[in-house]
Length: 172
Image 1 (tube, rainbow, N blue to C red):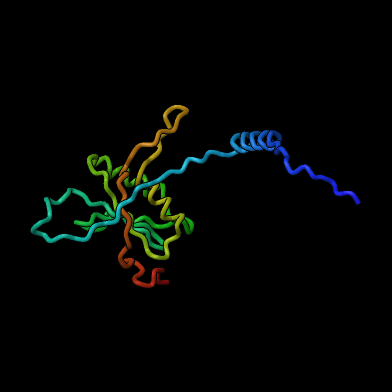
Image 2 (tube, rainbow, N blue to C red):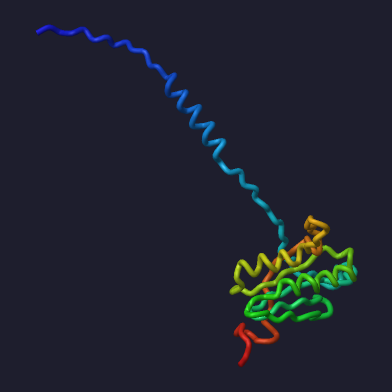
């Protein structure tokens, strides 16, 4: 038997592999979808400070409360302003937005609003309420223009529903 002498030196050709990676990389870059992530900055309501250190009262401290069967718009200083009942089992965000436009016309300098919700509030309802509070849409010709209502939104927990009480649903 003869022993073959093996050639232990070899050359690694990476040209084909690099070509494949260039093609795959360009394909992935072209086919990837660039997504725009929208970030909405919200504030948590601060703890109440003592009356002696409080600055002068604002003309309006707007609160929008989301309850299971209605929306309540209130001024923290003077109380409820409007109660918007549900329409066909859904919150009426159009009526909410229309009423907030009236408030904005009376108080154009106010940009803050607090959205208060119950722990059982659906996320979708919370987002639609925040959208109705933040801006309103106008059709101008063939374009839709979004104008700001109360863009500085704070979030918090709603107090007990004054209509239905702690149970969260209307009495029969």
